[in-house]
Length: 348
Image 1 (spheres, helix red, strand yellow):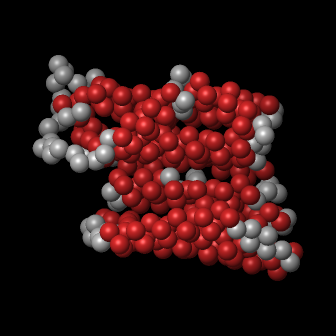
Image 2 (cartoon, helix red, strand yellow; image 1 turned 180 degrees about the vertical axis):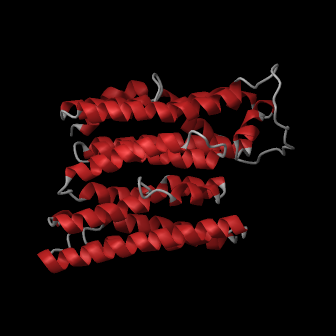
């Protein structure tokens, strides 16, 4: 792809997201989401591989369906109440429709089936954009509307944490594992969104940092499945020593950064007298932790002097810049002591 074309597409991607973030009118928000979707489609299909084209088609159809639902629901809301403002959603039918449309856009269970299939057909760089930047605009819209049925968000959140943990158990492809990881993390954010929007947004930013470092590590190792990951110690021994900690941070183990949002979310759910929901969310986190431990085992316990059952791939020297990887891994591992500062910022 030409650098000028790439620059235009990335600019359009950013423009669409910022239009949605700064709009208070449903039509402008919908327009931003459409620009965002149309800008990422050429990036997804640039490999000209049948799997990439299939993934792009699935993504386009899913996003078009969600955008049509969003436009229909916002028009219906304007017809019923006379309001186009995003924060003036009062009718239960249109609010529920818009919540489900945005849930389809970001891939919340039970309308998540497109996300693992689409992510599996993309390269790691485009997969990183899809897993992070593309979640930002729909998620902020979801935070701005005030659902008239609070049980819907709790149901979507619990289903997503369960499906995200359960679905990743038997996977060997790293991109599908990261897709189910994304579903589980978005479930945690959805659970807490109506009680503490600032905590939900902080969880989203923490998830962005952890996912960014995970994708960069896999890209540096040129790894797309567990067997390739198992032979990475001969190529990058220092990175192989740090990667299990990154994966365990994604799983939410202390004293790593990923523990902070889960800890604060469980605390807030308990304050809202939702101890049963908090318990179920904590139990589903164990499912996610299992497949992170599985990746950790594949990377570390198959290192020299142990024998590996997989063939060692031919590896060329990587030209990827390592500074972003180093910064993101540091943030993924060492931000837990900043928890009091995060709590203080959320209280403003």
